[in-house]
Amino acid sequence: MTTIAKSHDPGQANPFLVANFAPVTEEHVISNLQVTGAIPEELEGRFVRIGPNPSSKQNPRHFHWFLGTGMVHGVRLKEGRAEWYRNSYVLTDNAARDLKRPQLPYPRKTHGGSVNTNVLNIGGDLYALVEAGALPMKLDGNLQTTAYSDFSGTLKGAFSAHPRRDPVTGELHVLAYEPSKKYIEYLVVNTSGLSRTVSKISAPHQPMIHDTAITPSFVIVLDLPMTFNLVSAMTGKFPYVWNPKMQPRIGLLPRSGDADAIIWFEAPLCYVYHIMNAFEDAGKVVVDVVKNANYFDADVIKRGVKPPIFVRWVLDLQTGKLAETQLSDRSVEFPRLNDSRVGQSYRFGYTAQFTTDLQFGFACKHDLQTGETLEHSYGPGRATMEPVFVPKSTAGAEDEGWLLSYVYDQNTNTSDVVILDAQDFEGTPVATIHLPVRVPYGFHGNWVADCDLRF
Ligand SMILES: [Fe+2]
Image (cartoon, rainbow, N blue to C red):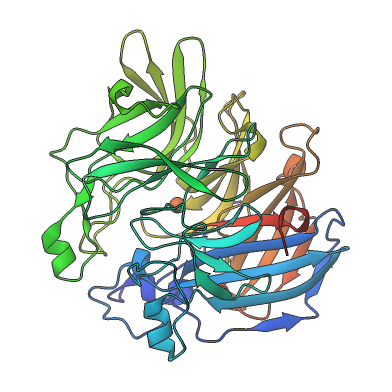
């Protein structure tokens, strides 16, 4: 059965400031968490996630979800126990000002805008990340922000919230942009967390590029019609607007970074925030994406009329044409997979329900071999955010692992961390960790194992 948690009152002016999109005002450290089921003992680390949590009162006419102050949430798991839940603001300069706290050190001047989109282990340290210019912010093991970081001086410009880790080399591949610059930077970050700029790709129309993907030969460049608009920026609105006059395109940048050798394909009129995966297949490059209509424009509230759908784009290197097929009939976002399959052919992907009227609800498991989409309903009035796959071992089957997610329960106005067995996707959760507080709907998270961190 499908259940949908109502996420906002349609009568309110701005859906991103009400119900479970509304910010929480307290930072907690909560131990002795109640658990239903049994937390797998193999899970030793932190399940962290981040989202916008405005730290000052916002004008509901102009507030944009993407611009809210970041807040990190996390649970610490060890020896089958949930040791704690914590949440804390990401202390950018703007957040420090709002909260009347000291500003944190930074190695070079950056804008103090929100860092709210992803939280990731880079070179053994934990970072909060955002695109479009603000530096990454370093977090400690208790999720406290300690400093801005430019990766020991190696990050010269902007970063991204969606680095793509090559499972073969462990390096991160990144496309970064800034509103003031008419190029995209292709960066590679090594396993020590040091960045190098490989090349710059001309982008005179200044597109917003949220995600990328890799194959053994290429880096995927989405050049789609959300472009910088100076008037919006100058008037305090979200600075990227829907620009349907622009020809959408998708590029295959050689991994060498040779920007002159990029191969462009015309793409359908759409915007893509997230790519599930990409791989090469006999003279073709397959890119699986969540395709949105004109989602989120400068007026914030005005949303696309078509639901986000999970589609496959096959780029034929011989014909130069893109062919699209739909992979699921569900309205979904936040695609994830077993990260050991990044850049390679794969069978299973995972998404969260996300509709045009901002409803979260079930999780999906997509079997790309059979075409089947399974749903996991978390129960009436309960809605999951992005599901994160954690493999049981490096040698197991592709779907041999757990799916972790933060699940909001509108019945109690609290959230749980739910752990599913990915091979028993529709079954009873392996464990549910009950939080006495709610975690607002947000963006991305990751499982960060203790063995992969320096602290
Ligand atoms: Fe994202």
